[in-house]
Amino acid sequence: MLKLPLFEKFLTYLFLIGFILTSPPMIKGQCLAKTFSAVIVATKDYGPYKVCTNGIEKGLKAIFPRVTIKIFSLTTESPFKISNNIKEIKPDIIFGVGTRACLFLDELDLKAPVVFTFIIDHTLKTLNKHTFAAVSLDVPTEKKLAILCQIIKRPKVGMFSTTIYKEKIQNIHLSCCKGNIKLIVSPFLNTVIELALKKIANSDINSFLITPDPIIYKNQEVVKYTLLWGFLNRIAICGLSKGYVKNGALFALEADIEALGNQTAKLGKLLIERKIKEKRYIEHPEKLVLSINLKTARRLGINIPKSLLDKAKFIVK
Image (cartoon, rainbow, N blue to C red):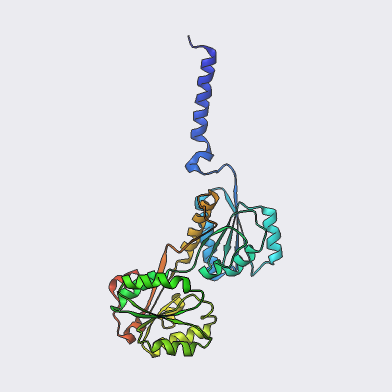
């Protein structure tokens, strides 16, 4: 005959097993019993900023089924009001979308983990108040050079160097050596783009990389002049986005903005789970978009491989 204490122990174990199997907090290791809260502060509430914000929102909802998300925009709400709302909400994590939003959040006294995105590497280095994780908008130059090598057999690539790009030049040189690319780096010592481009053109280059460097490309006029210079001198220009390709650049490789947002949400999960140990952890875009201008290619006498055309999301015919 079964003794009562042993029987009670059996019932206790049975109850615990049933609780473990049916309890929501144990599903995939996520803490779903507690509502998870997130705040997203975007520089703007339209255009690519909106697309990136939507990507973060979708990503968070896929990771945390019981998440509550509050979105603020610096174009429609005052920084003071946003700051007070963040204090009242006390979110588990905060996301900044765009340079202005990230700079704004960096100045606040935040208690929650912070993730930045839609911001270039150089600007991320200026954020110094918080420990953070980030998904940069920059596409590594090495990936652009890999595309260029598929288009031009012996590329002679020109690019400008400022204090921002000095650290990256060595890695770019190594990539060029592996890919049989001749790289001509010209220091950008003055603010006159016409003189700088004329000097680098004398190096007999057949292609030119536009870099996300705010020291050089500080306004649209500088970009327009560079694209026109490439067209007139029959130099293939690698731009930063589809907009550059529309205006004459041969090709551009850029981040898929919605995927950038989704990647940012996943990075936020890692930050919350304390799987990131670095004080400043920065990732680059995982999903990229290729744009090609066939009109420019014809003018330059270049045949774009079908393999690249098949990969391109945007083509100017």
